[in-house]
Structure formats: structure tokens, C-alpha cells
Image (cartoon, rainbow, N blue to C red):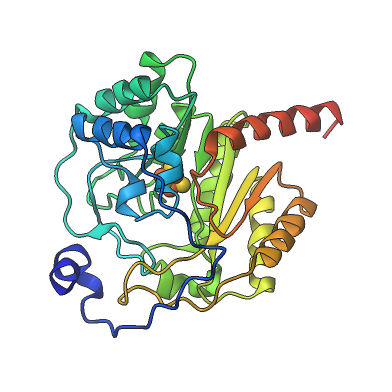
Length: 314
Ligand code: SF4
């Protein structure tokens, strides 16, 4: 374990260990690893692709991969940020792989995805934060898979000028950027990010192309209050964000941000009701909700909700 932390999370190595609480029963998932699961894994390996499903140690991997739903993480396995909640390795990344967009497109075809979610590490080392590479990946997927809708979950492009415009111009069907937590926890949870810059990015996506669905996600259990979460919901609606996901934070290792508490399923139901009352087109709030969990079904629901809103004159 110590060796893994030294290489994977050097910025956390000197942090004091915290006790990881036992997961309540509503968090525990049965292990599902059928033939489709192994086929998904083989496809990712064969095409030399990284997934956030594995890198983030996602609890839903058995269910998703058994349905051939994998969320590819582009631009390498090493992130330039060191967020205290995240299990992705931190360090100096490799140069970009110009053939990666093509490999993602082929993998999407082989998986037979109707809707794909593509995410990435943060690349503060690149002048454009990787915006061009993300845009190329969107175009490559579209070219090979004209019937597939594309969702990107991007970094914040902090300090990269108008680099994000390149991604907006590639017109993903869904532009997702996760706020992750409430403003007062940013210095400890997302020290390299700025809350209002992330909000502005979401606002910019919608202003640049109102056809794009915008989406953002929060984790609870990091030390926020219900009122903090309500405020974030209001901020996201002010930025015209369409879709909100809220899930329980799970602590990857003793060196990561300690879990403050587990929100109960009833509290998640309440969060969903509050969010819907604030006017999001779609909301997913359950303990195991993750940005890309059930993303294809959610995208269908999102489209229907927009059509209903238009029919109602909204
Ligand atoms: S929820 Fe997302 S990250 Fe987790 S396994 Fe499913 S597709 Fe992968």
C-alpha cells in the first residue's frame, strides 16, 4: 500500500491516515463479472485505452461493464491536479497520443454504444489544457459512429483563456463539468480549481451553444450541509445547467479526504426533490450515482424533458 501511494499519489503521501468507515448496506454492491464484463475489459486493453471506471475504482464497474458501458479517460493516466478525493494518479503526464481519438472511436463502435461518455485527466501542462484533443476525439467518435451521442466530462481549463471554445465548437451532445463539492470545501477538496471558474465554464458552454445539454455533478459526504448543497443547486441553475447528478463520496484510501458521513437514501430522495423544484431538466441523486452511471438512459430522459419544456412554452 505504501509503495502504491508513493507512486500514485505523491502529494498525499505525507498526509495523516484517516480511518475509512465501514460502508452502510445501501452502498455495498454485489460483484458482477460475467462474460460481457470481461469482453469490455478485453476491448479496453486491446485498444490501449484507460477508463475512469478502473482508475477511480468505481463501485458500479460490474454493472456497467456487464452492459458494455465503459467511460474512457483520455489524455493519459496521470493527472496534473491532486484533488483530495480522487483516486487517479497525480504527476507529470506523458505527451499526448495523436492516435488515441481514433482508438476511442473504434472502441465505441465495437462496444455498440448509443451514448458514450468520455472524460479525461487534467492537463495543466498543455497550452490549451487538452481542448483540441478532446474536440478531435468528439469528431472521431462521430465520424465512426454517426448514430452515437457524445457526452464529454471535461477539466476546467483554468488559466487557458478561451481554450474551452474549441470543445464547445465540436458540439458534444452533453457538456459535463463536475463542481464536485460546495465552495467552502474547494481549498481542501479541489485545491487546484476555483468554484466560480467552474460555474462560468458551464455557463459559457450553454451561452456558446444553447443546443448542448449541460450537466454537472456533486459528491456529498465530504463535510457539506444541506444548505450548502441548496446554494450550489441555485448557482447551477443560474448558469442554466440542465442536469444534476449527486452521489455519495467514497474514500479510496486512508490518505484521501476523510468521509464526513454517509447520506441516507431518504436524504438523497430529498435532494432529488429539491433539485427538481429548482428547475433542472433532469436529476439523478442516489448514493451510487456517478456522472456516467446510466448515462444513456439519462440522456434519453433529458431529451424528453426538453421536449416537454418546449411544449409547455418554457
Ligand atoms: S458509473 Fe461511470 S465510471 Fe462507474 S463504472 Fe459506470 S461508466 Fe464507469
